[in-house]
Length: 164
Image (cartoon, rainbow, N blue to C red):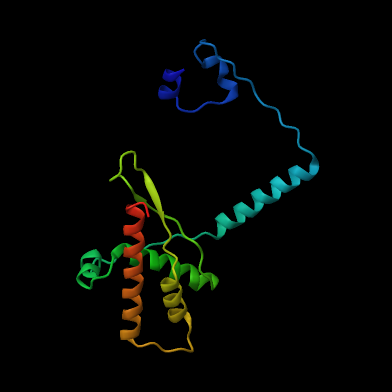
């Protein structure tokens, strides 16, 4: 069976005869769905396809400003990436959402990953500030808010790395 998995890493019930004959007990499952269940599934497929059709992915390369410049400004580059995600969604939806970012706890024996939650009061405050057209913020106020976001993100990352 291991050879089947490594040489042909997918399987369909119609291919049961192609498997090695070592104690293989595979049979097709037949599902009976009523009209209501089929309708729900079809609607979910249609909703998903509509979402996929609306999805637009694009990117921009900025080679003039990157992590080295962030570091010179004493701002965590990852914190700014997480802030960019929050700001993009806040701009589109008008709300903040919980976000998952993993970090390594490999410093511990058997350590794997821990969760960082980059959606903070600081990120929300700057998202609100940057999207509210009726309120003017100075560059120094925005800089202070960015530094606060970075400081909070650094603290959360250190706590997660240490298993706190």
